[in-house]
Image 1 (tube, rainbow, N blue to C red):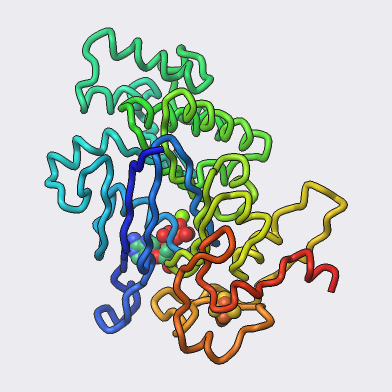
Image 2 (image 1 turned 135 degrees about the vertical axis):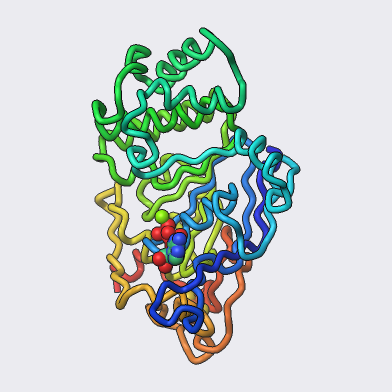
Length: 332
Ligand SMILES: Nc1ncnc2c1ncn2[C@@H]1O[C@H](COP(=O)(O)OP(=O)(O)O)[C@@H](O)[C@H]1O
Ligand code: SF4
Ligand SMILES: [Mg+2]
């Protein structure tokens, strides 16, 4: 597999929206995130709401300007591109959202919405445009005749398919999927995940797949990065990360996923307290205010743990070697 996207030390801060504008510390939404995506693969980015996943997704494709860091996509230095080059590159990097309705113009037919990118990037002219729109609708499992209808005439799952067709229209090699199934019923979720997997196989697409829990990740991703307060706290191949997580935060997320094998028990670890404010992240280990690890000590409050190889994953915990499995906690 060859590398498609490299993200190095990405930082995205937002100016505080508090009353004391300028005086309040910035929101540290993304605080030094690095990862790589290979051609044709899926990397999942997982973490609870507010941990910075969407900020990573939007900044990587430069829908938002970064605070600092470097992104290389298909050998282009994304943050150094001028507007024209960026527009050309946009064709290759697309995004789909949790709620495709918000990104579809209610007064535009589905066909016109899908055709927009084809026209902007001059990928086809005349009757060829309509033919392509029909083929795209078919490819995502919809009737080509739907091109004449409006977004409100469709169900949530169908709208997500339209959002996918729209992204595919410009022939990308990479799609940021920002919680594309989080708002759908479980049965519809599976259908959309299968569609994404089929499209990946047929078109060699790579995905950055954003999710707030680990439940859908096993079905779609080869590798996983777990985020907490703007940082990656654990990353690695999906299977070892799910079966033998080394960061106590990953163990907690994992414990919330129903166990398919009823013979295997694990404790449900409910984290105490709320996610700390990303404008005032705790010193030392950012997870220490909610950590349940038995070895947690004074060091955790002072020293920032770095992401380092531990068994089969990379984990940012001083005591990752000693992290108990959720199963062990169930027996205790
Ligand atoms: N445009 C923005 N302006 C100010 N703060 C923002 C903005 N977008 C996101 N944030 C804040 O940044 C943090 C991370 O948000 P986000 O990237 O949306 O996380 P996630 O997708 O994991 O829920 C949150 O505290 C959120 O409130
Ligand atoms: S470094 Fe300490 S506080 Fe942080 S996750 Fe590990 S044990 Fe918990
Ligand atoms: Mg989000």
